[in-house]
Every structure is written in structure tokens, then in C-alpha cells.
Image (tube, rainbow, N blue to C red; front, top):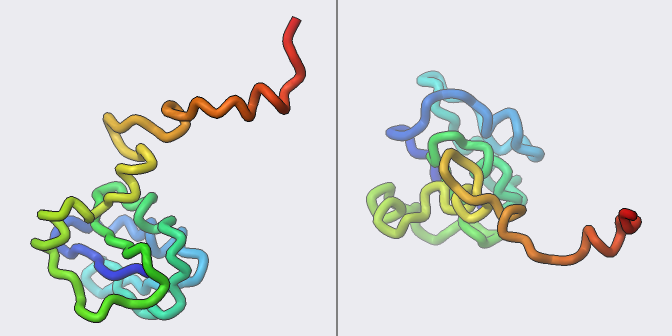
Length: 113
């Protein structure tokens, strides 16, 4: 579930607002998105993946955390934008597709001659 938006890192691009399939965010008056409907979050990580400045943290749990995470703790634990890093989105990162060695595509495509 989406747990945190860093006002410090956010650049106000509102990509998270636009890509969220369940309309969890509202654009704040200062341009920083707010968690308006956190309970609607489906933990899909799309917002975190699209955030160009790693300003979001989505916890891998379907229920909200008991205690709101603090930004310093998230930074220290390298959790802000961690999903985006895992999938390789962002400058200088290796994408999962580049690491994939699954022969699946070879199984479905016709053999070249």
C-alpha cells in the first residue's frame, strides 16, 4: 500500500496522480500529491515505478502500516523508490528485461532460418 510521498524530493510532475489506476492521489495545493484515498491502493507499484525522482514508497502489504514511516528511515533503509530501482527504471539502471535469461520468447517465436 502507498505509505509515503516525499515533499522534499517531489518535483510536482503529478505522474503518480495520472498513472494510479484507483485514483489514490489528489494534487496538493503546493503541487505535491497527497494520499487522498489510501484505502483504495491496490499495491500495484505503478506510482512508484513512474516517479522520476524516487519520492514515493509503496509498502508490499495490502494493509496500511501501523506507524507512518519517517523519511529519514526510508532513506536510510534505501526504500524510497526501491521498486523503481528493482525493475531498473531510471538513468543508469539495468532493467529486468536486460537481466532476463528465460527462454520463453524462443519457445513462442518461429525459428529463423
